[in-house]
Length: 183
Image 1: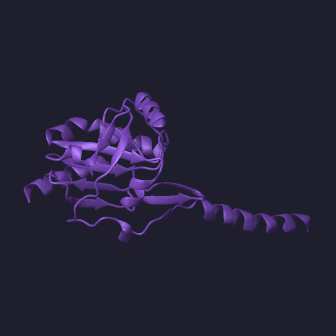
Image 2: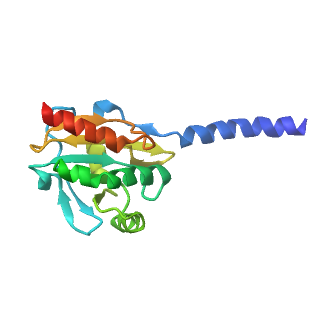
Image 3: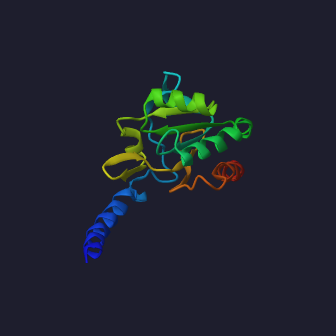
C-alpha cells in the first residue's frame, strides 16, 4: 500500500520532469525564408573581435546555431565542421557558429577542441531570436540546432532545421554548397 502511494506520487513528478526537459523549438515560420536577405548582425568572437555577417560578403557562409559549448552533440557537430575546414576553404565558404554562450566559454571550447573557425557569442539571444533559432529547456533559452547557407550576396539559399549532429551534417552542407554553386 505504501509503495503504491509513493509510486503514484512519483509518476506525475517524473512525467513533469520529462516534459520540462523536452526542448520547445520556435516555429520555422519565425525564420528568415530561403531567397531573402540574411539579417545582418554583429557579435563577439572567441578572438574577442566584433564580427558582422556583412564582413563575409563575397563568400559563402555556413551559419550554424548550436545549443551549448562542450556538450556531446555540439562537440560532434563542431568536430565535423573542423574536419572539413579545408573543403569549405576550397569552396570559399566560411563556417560561423553561434550560441548563447559567452566569449570566455567559446575560448575554452575552441582551445579544448582545437576549433579554428569563428564561434560567436549571443548571450542576449538577439541573433538566435532574429533567425528563429531558439529553443527552451525548462526555463533556459538556448540556440536551436539550425544551419543557414548564405550566398556571397547575403541571400539565404538553404536552411536546415533541427539538425541531428550525429550523421555527417557537414558533408550534407558541402554537397548542398556544390549544388547551389551550379545553379
